[in-house]
Image (spheres, rainbow, N blue to C red):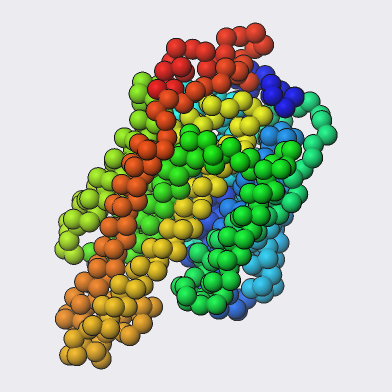
Length: 526
């Protein structure tokens, strides 16, 4: 093995407890992304600080995203197990402290600590899965891991609401402790690695610059258009700092002996193109997840449960498609399987763009199902494909780069789609007929209150529904364009063949035939 790192050789029956631990740790990260949302009124009532509420979510996403590449590199240098264990411990400490937060500032700081632990989990869980399972099995495992995110997106807000209403919002964080303790126990007892110890020169300068560049970029995307205007001085300074930190990081990484994010990740066509497609996939996911439920309630008049079901369909078809993806990429290759998924997202975008104000419910459900299937066929084959092109000593950094690209795409999508919907909706409100001026709100925030409160007559309600539809229609058009961009990236920037690395698989005995040497695995290269 290059780098002197040799993964443990595990028997097949030893993998199940570790996989359960991976699913549990992934569930911790996924649930804490959304579980706080429904409890915010109770949190504010207890702690105050309503003006800081946005940071409860933003700081978690920010800390998680920017640290993923660093953890991915550390997992290659020192092994997956210590990085994952430290990440889970940090996450649980952040959870325990969040549960006893005495004001909003303290809660934000402890959520940042949670995010630091979540970054380690996000970087290493998929890497460990790649270590344990061969190319033919990884698609199924990725389907299970993807299902965690889908289930959490539906279940977590409901759990948060139950705790807030019948117990205390603090239980949202307390519940992480027994789950995390069980996951830690399974990891410590079941995950074994043999890592040859060497002295490593940690790229502190590169890590700091990478954190600064990514942090400033995501900060600008999250706060632009909300905390400050896009063309304001703070926005210009933040994005200028992003560019400067990124340029210096490139220079430092080129000279580092063990760079945190090796330049070849972004210069090789295969990795750079795959990351680009993963980024646009993340953009589509956040666009649909954020705006589809609101559109279903405000425009179609569905209740919260029914609107949640429309989105939940995506969460159902995503893991199903990811689980079935191995059947495709073993036959037609990783790139072409992802291309099929991208075409499904384009079809989803067409369905949503053609959805009228008075659409039947089956139409957005169909669009949601297509989007989920497309995501499963894009993300899983690309991660599995990238993992198959490198040996154990580089699998962490490659997987971490893919996860970083996905979360960066979600941050970009939240910013872009949020700005687009606000601009379109505000323009429609400004152009409201004079006869409706008294009933139509002048701000974007007032639209949902008027529609939900039933304070407007039929004409005003119809106007507001049409305005919300127009603003969401712009997001649907963005989804279509993002799907088309994914197709172009896959065709233009990703080679059809993924060259697989011929290395012994950790689930097999020494001397056994390498998984990547089987005819099926070789065919996955294209």
